[in-house]
Image (cartoon, rainbow, N blue to C red; front, side):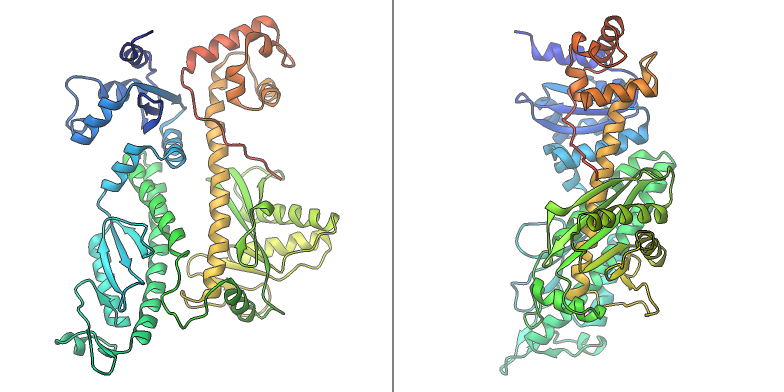
Amino acid sequence: MSDPVVTLKEKVRRLPDKPGVYLMKDRLGRIIYVGKAKSLKKRVSSYFQRGRPRTLSQPKIRALIEMITDLDTIEVKSEPEALLLEGKLIKQWRPRYNTDFTDDKRFLLVRVDPNETMPRFRLTRIKKDDRSRYFGPFAHSGLLRKTLAQMRRQYGILLGDGTPQQLPDGNWRLYDDVRQELYGAGTIVSAADYRRRVDEACGFLEGKSREWLATLRAEMTAAAEKQAFEKAAELRDVVFALEQTLAKTRTFERLDPTRPTGDVDALRELGEALGLAGPPRTMECFDISHISGTFVVASMVHFADGRPDKDHYRRFQIKSFIGNDDFKAMEEVVGRRYRRLAAEQKPFPDLVVIDGGRGQIGAALKAFIGLDVMPPPIIGLAKKHETVIFPDERKPLNLPLSHPALNLLQRLRDEAHRFANTYNADLRSRKIRESVLDDFPGLGPVRRAALLAHFGSMDKLRAATVGQLAEAKGFGPKFAADLHAFLHQVDSSKAPPEIPAPAE
């Protein structure tokens, strides 16, 4: 039996001086850390040098190094590809030490506990599974504190330092000092009225979180373009965490017990707000996802009675053009979706929601004109101010951020966005892993496509014997033997299995 330490050292010595991602494993083969590197050889070797840099001498990192008994690597073509792949694998595998490192970043959250009689807006750095509502993370603590101070004046809510007192008549006194004269809302309030204040403030803070998310995404993209990859990776981690927090926040119950709750009420209010004939029991939402015009894909999610119906989700690769044109992409996928439904004589949804504004709605309508069919009700949901856009002469509609109808549209839109981004990431990962074939001499795009079509995935291609490779169309025994040797020389990693990405 070979010594695992010797095997690990040998792997490290053989690492290439190229960009990629490395996966550290423990003695049970579990992935405990995923990292990216401009040079796999230099970066991974630094973990095992006696004179490690100070950043690798922290107690937690020392504990990680002591647990490493094996490692895999995935070589890519550039540092930006490594950055993207690292993020995808961290989200996919949730390695213990990546999670710990992310949690160590001291970003603030705002916590509101609905179980309190008089809920307060508290700052915390730890998110628990306790049915509370969480907002954030916020990297700029000073800006967050100013925002909370503004909310206290505007909405008359309690922060963490508040100590309300119940009065003999059942009402509550929020403050017993000069603050009651400084803040706009009254200091004497009933519990029900106070909860309405809290609900409005939560809606405001959720909107702030969305603005913050858009800003973070822009900063992350700018950092990556400037090749500031460490900064881009840090911002990416915050974006992931904020997206997850926003998604989970909307699953909690509203704080106002007098407000209509449940999917039935939200559907009814949505139908009324949009002027529909009745509640939209079936809804479909479309979203386009791409990276600077590459890997352009689209998603369509289907909600039935206000809930996700994943059996009817669809994913699309753009076929009619190459490049970056959201309008043309939207026209194509909407046309493909409802051409099929019309051909199969299946009913259209009660409402179609387009992620975007008037331009995207126009593209969707153009698709229905091309099909020569009457479209169902269509609206757009513009992200900047969560504005509902109509395809006719009606003015844009801005519902309160805490309105159940808007919350339902946001859940639908965010699910379409998540589904599209997941598909995009799958395609990028597959492309990155297939890129190793570019370095094999004599393998042009036609033969490469035929090879991948024959085996179906890079995992199956790597696992194929010389004889199986020779069975592929256009491959002889010598070419198959050379390819087999090439694959096993340049890729000693046992990359995680691909996620199948069927497209409509």
